[in-house]
Image 1 (tube, rainbow, N blue to C red):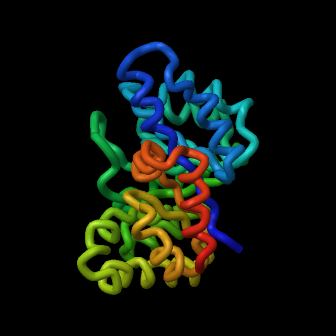
Image 2: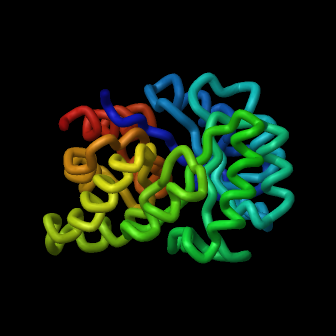
Image 3: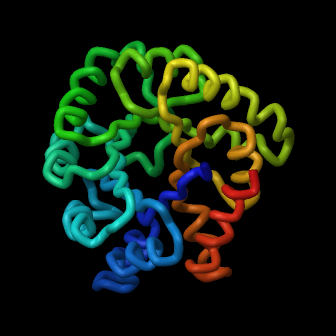
Length: 241
């Protein structure tokens, strides 16, 4: 079964917010992504609402027909309240600091075990599939299993950075982490700096990869290729395994 592509639309909201008004139209863009073949839509509302706003998330919910994935830091009560109200298909828990430009590390699932167990149980009791952002570290994967999460999302920045220099070396920690996740019956998602250049190689080597969430590279490619063509190009990379 091919890995699903979830399009992160944060950058479209950033572009809209830079000028004010409603151009580009975030809601129309999300629906078009689905129409062009995306199997999910991802948003990551942050407390300062510098890109996707909390109202955007509420407006998107009744419009989407594919999987809705909401990312964020559950230590922000406003985020937790939003997720419990929206009840998306999936919530992805990310340990962002306030004001952080972008996500840059996974959870320490050992140190934060009790906290994660509590918040994950709340989301799962509400019928929401849970995923937690983790580095490609077997210890963190094993800790993730203890939290009760349904899935992990492998944080792939290190892979993307090292890919052009030595792709075999870059992928190795992720193969090991994914194999351990599969042994523990954890679902596997992945995201951060995956692109047309490195996506196929990653997907080929990660057994059981269920979903990738891609925003920055995909939206950047769409400037050149158009969004419909770009989504098809990414889907093709995922089907070439």
